[in-house]
Image (tube, rainbow, N blue to C red; front, top):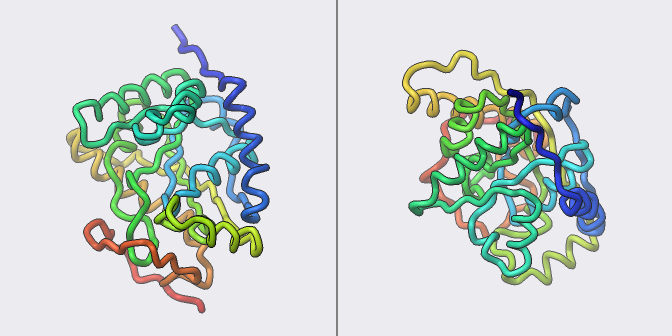
Length: 259
């Protein structure tokens, strides 16, 4: 028997459109890449890098621009908020309780969503990345496991520029960054990349997850590279509130800086 297809609730469709209105005063959103119609008709995993607290709003606006209605995997704290939590549940998003006994529930919930032909958006880094050069850091294996279980394709999504709107420390000391964003409207880019080829992944479940995670993060790197022209080594805008962390930096070829 065929799985029924998930349809985004009206509230979520309205919020997707509203996000484009909300980001307009703060930045100039540019969406590139392809989101083939075929991907909208079946289960898809969108794997995005994470650079700023502003990212979720950017991704919601970019998804609307691309005609997509993803279900978002978000930290459990968001679902505990009095109003926002109700909205998240009502819109069909997926709770992730990291580092708790309930962490495995997120993978099961994502599997059910994909079985309903939904699109699931997840940040494989599991946090705002703290790579000093702001490249995607080492990913968690959850996305790879979701793909392995469901057979859904993984589409890497790169975003760049949101850190010039809201710094890492937000919501602390937000007034000055927001005023600067309103005055300058920095360009924020989102690029939908090519689905990651996981056909060569083999071995035990654990080995497959590690291999696939590496390929997924490399796919995000590839989607991010054209967005960082002129700032391949260091970002032009430096968020000084971001605490650098070398513990999850991934080895990668030294990028050629074209500045």
